[in-house]
Each structure stands twice: as structure tokens, then as C-alpha cells.
Amino acid sequence: MNEEPPLGERFSQVYLQRGLPAKDSLRARFRIGAFIKNYRSETREKIATAIGRRLGVPASAYHLGDFTQKCDLRDLLDLVSVVQSVLGDGSSFVSDVNAIFREENLGYIADPKGGVRYFKDEEFERSRMALVAGIGLPRYTAAREAYEDAHAALVGGSPDSLTAVRRAFDAVENVFKMMTGEARLGSSEVGKRLKPRLAELPGRAADASNRLAESFSDWINACHQYRHAEGVPEPEPPPMDLALALISSAATYLRWLVGMDSASASA
Image (cartoon, rainbow, N blue to C red):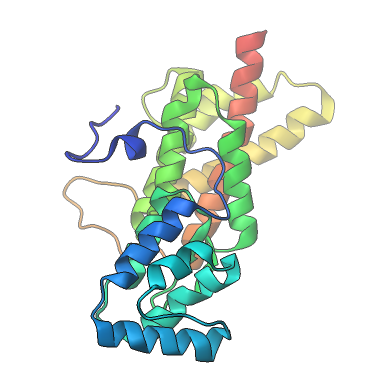
């Protein structure tokens, strides 16, 4: 079911195609600079001094907005930790920067101390980029958006691993339901609707696919530990390493299901 976007959400965040995450963005540079240049003059002085000492490049307290637009990319990304070290705990700067990274579709995330990294890790981000590019057909719009939501839930000062796992599951379930007509995705549905289809494959492909279907069922059961259940308290969020493993596995099963679904559609 498609939900209405939140009231007041900008058009570009609702309707524009995201595409692959970029490494740099003039809009992001301007927005980060806009936050910094609005700090009090004494704070800007401290930031400019810290830039010189820690990054080895000159900066003026009165032209920090210009600095973010013209500096090397490495200095822009290093700047986040420099500014956070000046502002200290309690500042919303990291959350604001992560929102900018997300909204301007940059493949980075800042930790609570301002250290910028590739989004979780470079391989994880590369996997996301490849998957999103591979399920670009309109038929898979809802699945693609759910998987993007899973990654977006991991962005920010307080990553939401519970929502991330749930939305990754939603993406896989969406494709499975379109393929089979089933109302839900569970291990029993895999046995009833997917395994008979795999048994028709030739030779070793049938055996290998059946074994993959078994691991798919295990993944489903693992995700169900974090699914909604009426009358049951919300589960503790999964540890981040577990969440990343479940979300990465979701990408594998999405590619597999989409491949089968696309082959059936073109047959």
C-alpha cells in the first residue's frame, strides 16, 4: 500500500528520481555552509582556527560559506568532524549534515562525533547502488522505495536498525507477492509457491535453487523476529551488525526474485 508523503515534504524528496549516490554536490556544500556561517562570530572564529590547525588550509571566520563551496572534497568531509569538535555534544550539526547527505543523495554518513564515512561501508553502499540501478522498472517502484527506506533509516545521529530491517523485508515481500499472488511472505509460502517453480529447473540448478530457497526461508524467519505483531511489545532493535547482514541479504534475495519475475514476464 502506497502511503501519502508527510505534509510539507519538499517535492524533490518525494518525486524526483534519486539515481546513484553522488560523491559531491554544490547544493550540499551550500547547505552545510549555510549552517556554519550562521553560528555566532566567536564560534566561527574557533572553527576557522581549527580548520587551519587540523586541515592545514586557510579559512576566514567571515567566509566559511565560501570555504565550503570552494574547498577540496576531502576538506569538506573532514570539516564535519572539525565543526563538531568545536560545537561539542548537544549540537544538532551532525544530524543536520546527515539529513543533507540523504536529501542530496550523497553516499556518506557522519558518526555522532562528526567522522564522515562511506554509507556504513563502501561495499555495503556499492551493493545498494547496484541493486537500485538493477530494479529500475516501474513494476518494482514500491520494492525499490522500501529498500531505499531501509538504508535511509540507518542515516542520522541515531540509526534506526529496527525500521531498516522491516523496510528491507517489505521490499522483498512486495516482489514475492507480485510474483505469486500470495498475501504475505512466510516460509510456508516459499514452500508452497516458490519451491515447485524451482523444481522445474534443469539438473543442478534445481538442487542449488532449492538450497537457496531454504536459506531464504531462514532469512524470512530471522526478519520475522523484528516484524510487527499485535498485542506484543516492540522488540529490541537488532544490533547494527545483524541489521546490516539482514539488509545485505535482502538485496541478494531481491535480485533473485526480480530475475525470476522478469524472466516470467518476458516469456
